[in-house]
Image (cartoon, rainbow, N blue to C red):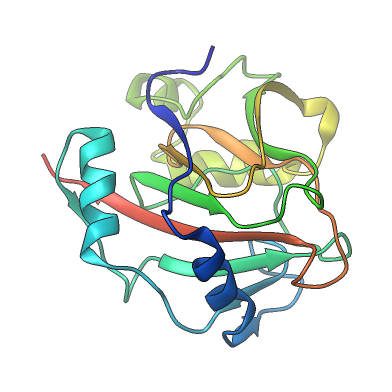
Length: 205
């Protein structure tokens, strides 16, 4: 069973084909193999106040978005050939991560994995007491010492949950809290690859 702060909503968009069509026909940037995600990201974000309100309803809190600083509404796609410098990771500096899958079901493989750090027996980012015991001042230092060096080492991570890709499925979760990553890439073009719309935001106290 998924933790309560990992929310999965099927049928998120009322007209997903229109959203997918926008994603297929917009311009994308690529950043080389040194980026933290595989593939390309749209130049522009696409969102409305309705999306923000839906997220607030789902997490039952008001949220703050900062599209100029954190991605909110940009599309991303990755083929089976794309690589990135990280796999299992934490999303630093943000509270919540939202992903809407726009890949067609007949093309899709894998999904979003939630992992356990085997060596440290951690199922989520460490709290302040744990950080001190690990001789880390903050989560960024923890990541540099204990996550990034093993980000692609399968044996270092235990897969706790895999949320499969499904067309027009939304996943909302605390990306700063859970070790997570793409479990499988597929396709050879934007038309049949892993296509998603991504959102990062903070909840207001």
